[in-house]
Length: 287
Image (cartoon, one colour):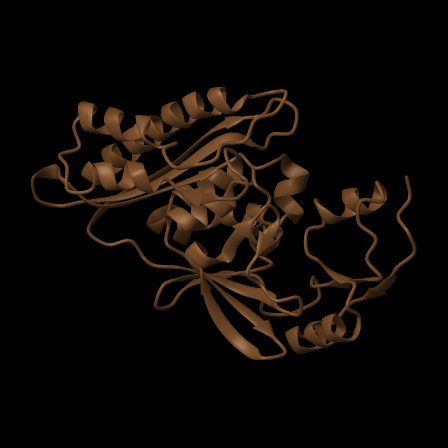
């Protein structure tokens, strides 16, 4: 099908893009377009205008400056190829390699994925597990939003209608920190039926000093598995403790169910994916 008619704008600055969003209430931002354009072709979305961010300088690239800073229009391919990310946060390039296909990796952007907040997207959970933040610019100026506050509900974030994500900031992991992302991939779409990102730091005696476990695919938004985190914090990271925490990953969560995976099956997958992610993260933390 063909989309409804729409205006098309190609601003060259973030300020111009914000102005278009203010002047055209029904405008939508265009980054990679892999979610928006199919929805428009199916007439599920009918924006009055598209504001294309691809001509704005400074929204792409990766640098280390008081944290790892990733421009919002940085593509998955750039994440995969980044030596800085492979060295400091290997979970990011590893996960990017398994997003979609070559076409999606070449055009899809990290900022677009976070703003869209698909409940089965990979990078919502990854940024959440890493304790990341996003910088957003709107009519009211610039502000920083933590990943814990960004994802509100299904396809809903705490961004204002005229705000644009400009940068993702990841704290540089310190100490004996390991991380891993594990997912059960839907055989047709490639999205996560259940995905789990785990980031943990070891303390004295190989105890778990801190851990963040983020889940995607299982609920209406990317969320923390707080019961599993609490069960593991301060504990020795032996097989029994990891298995026990993994079985608690679904506690307190309202799990999705559909024709491919029921809520009960997702709960089972959540335990399996959490255990695998924790085991790999622990192995990496130990070196």
